[in-house]
Amino acid sequence: MQDSVTVRMAAPAEQIWGLVSDITNTGKFSPETFAAEWLGGATAPAVGVKFRGHVDRNGWGLKYSTVCRIIASEPGREFAFTVLGPGGMGINTWRYRFEPVEGGTDVTESFQLHTDTLPVRIYWLLAGRSRGKTNVKGMRETLERIKAVVE
Image (cartoon, rainbow, N blue to C red):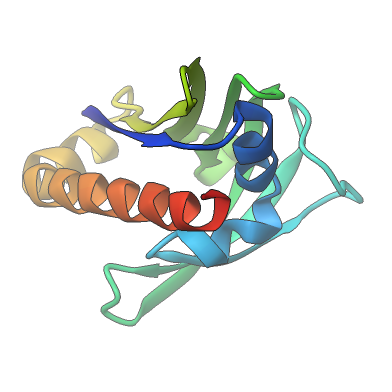
């Protein structure tokens, strides 16, 4: 109930991290999340900060918003957030890792579905294979869009 995609980019890790960690850029890169805004007066990423993402799921017209909490914010190395469900429980964690390599950075985007609740387990049993493929395709598209900007 997790997967990842890595794309090499000819740019420094800190530059790429800056684009990814500014959640107001999300709509420029993600094929599903078309906008995001900081919550609680936040204006920059930090562990514990929350933001709201606006999603057009699968491009089918199912639009909704989710609140997310940043769980890792280390410039040039890692940015991660957890999508929160009812009662503030984590549903899915999205993570970006930045690995400097000669001539640029390997950027890995990953997701991990939290399977500690019955509704999430049932969802994954019914739609997991299809959703997993969609997530991998979306992560690759996101990373390629970021690459086009930084290169």
